Amino acid sequence: MKFYISWYPNPPDPKYWEWFDVDGLMISLVNLRGNNLTKAINLGIHRFIGFDGSIFLDSGAFQSKNNNKSATEILELQNWLRPDLISHLDKPIIGLESIQVKQRWQKLRETFENAKIARKWEKSNDNIQVVYVIQGWNRESLRICAVKMAKLNCDYYGIGSLYRQSLSEIMARIKIVREIIGPKPKLHLFGVNPLKFLKEVSTNDLFYKVDSLDCSSPIRAGVVKEFLDPATLERVHIDEASTECSCPVCRKYQSFISLIGLNGKMRLNNKIRAIHNAYWYTKSVKFLNNCEC
Image (cartoon, rainbow, N blue to C red; front, side, top):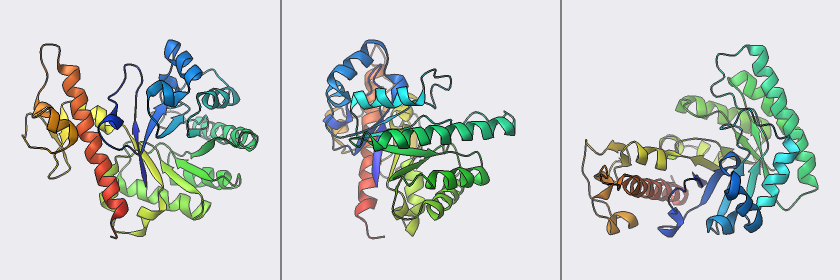
């Protein structure tokens, strides 16, 4: 299972790969804009960032629900940036719980229509892997979307709108999707906390039914003054505990993860916490990948 760390280019998140081996980065297209987007197109996303590993560039649908570019225009833009994986323009259900059911079904139809466009586009652009996003606000709608997506016979699928879902609900949705798409295609989970998820599934065969996931917890936790306790792998506020850590960034900046960072040092301390968090997330995923549980 690969762990993609969400990475924001403006202002730039820490360069995690300068501290430890990173599986991959998840970058949203909507976060590349202005001069940054121009440079990234000219150089390619890898050279622009300075990262040689796998980059997953999503369509930015979650952050920008009113995007005025067509599905094909977004695919072409993603292709110019030359990442390793991209996702088509989908219509997330997160934050739309209050809209009418009729409007939700319309969002689902738009997601599938954009997936059909992407599948046709992918067949003439076989130099890049497209991840097809299966959406749904409940199990019934997810199942219907998965059945339609499975007919496209794709190599890589993803399950969207998992943010803040319970572990039991996430696992139920994985089982639904796997039963429909079968064992062969790869499967990605969008916006899932890797530690909570992996602790739950590492002792059953569900672990082997997921190929990749992404998470923005390292930087988010760092900003709200939380870090992963190496002993428990639980998020701890800097006021609640002090701990020694042997990760690469803590060896260089001893005790910095537990400091607020006054006098203009707050951003530095936030980044140090983010690197620390990302290291332990990545280490834990790699451990479970190699563990015959």
